[in-house]
Length: 252
Image (cartoon, rainbow, N blue to C red; front, side, top):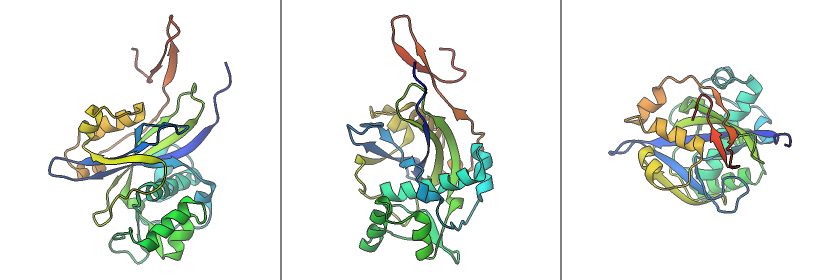
């Protein structure tokens, strides 16, 4: 009977790539024993960092107003959510959704030692994403992202996150790498296979995978029209003291 824990804004990205067998999504298994979601398979992502709001951030694609409308928030928050989504993806996978200021192609391979040093410095808090992009004369490619979902951690949890989910196509010339220390397994899977693989999955991940499993290719997933609403599962205590989570509108 205590007050719910304070929520932290967070962002996560479902990276998709096309294969002959259909689109695949990238999943990380968080290290067992971590305070939140240890041992679970998740999309790259994490909490908003104060540094995400620092400095000027040049965009190529939908402006903060578009993301604010999509996720039902104000523009300053929308800006840092997009920044956090791109930063966390780079920190956890080595994939950077950015391009040169003068337009043209996406960044090619960013797995060199020099880029790994940039990624490590970002992860360590020694620089912010706006600082990195400015120094490298790059812009954040918001045109590569799509709004996907919005989930809020139930009030019974000790750690709570207000998480916006993004969708993005995996850049062709980049590779996901084994970087960062929060995951002990990394894999590409067809969404339908991920659902039946026996992997530990949280309800938001299951819901997103179910939606993605319906698409035959990445283009159809990116162009699908979505009306996003915040989903907050509620705890229901049974007569025997057991607790289950119920989604809004789910009578059973």
